[in-house]
Length: 420
Image (cartoon, rainbow, N blue to C red; front, side, top):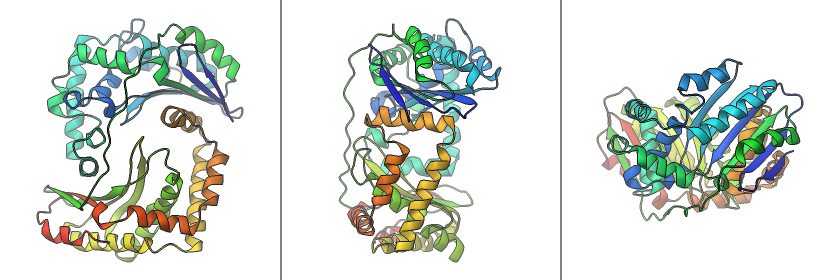
């Protein structure tokens, strides 16, 4: 399904040939993100990612970078997360060489021009303002702060106004120097391209990139002895809530079991939460659950937007469903959850971008690549007893975290509900 090569400088290259595709996607994964920042430089990883797109020696402006790709119908973008930063480009397969040239150029030759830094600083501050105005986004920030207080995982990826305004060009360059190393990077390619053909073009562009010593990871503490609640009162039409518990890391042996439990509880319109909270009780338009996995931690989160007057009723109803799932699910629910999980995976991996992200993200985060068949075998083997054991392990009174953004002020009634 894929080929892997490692250059002398440590850069890992993964290719997956999709001969029936008309496209090719290139994705560069750097093993860096907001968790590798100090508290004082919060947001620097995201700031740097923006600046990579602002001009190189050969393409001095952001427009020249984007128009080279968009001029052939392609797409180029990037993104920063807690543990990884991605730069990707998808083009028609005949434009592979151009896409590789553009991506390697912005990664290795970006200017970090002082004028561009000051302009982008204002852009990011507006992005922060936008996120603060979006209650769905804001409640996700708050739940992370509750799950991981005063820890890297609890900080917002984009940073904060007071830190973004103080980051200097020297700090940005130092951050890039210590985190953007070939031995901390994966180049993943998927589409109508052969491995040997890709490698022949990759080596001349990347083999002079010097490896370096990589700094250590970051500290995570999941210990929690009592339920936590945080309300941010805001005069809006809905109350937006996140109810979360700590979950499992990338490498945890029960990671996929938790993902399947999530599918049964809150993925899709036939899930328990959607059926009960929306269809039967009419308490929410949007309600769903999701999991996140990190190096040493993880989370299992339920999101809902509800009528502020019914916030207590909605929280109680959601907790009731959480309590019920601890008692186990039926055999038919298990079958549905498995087939939904497998079917979504099949559909996702028809696209060259998703295939590139599938292999690249596993390599950078776990250094162990599972094929689609590997994952399907794991999912098929999960039992009802395993799901029940995982639910009982993570769904506890003392592990609950509830964040709310909306016209809600009274804490006591909600705090009293935090039991399952």
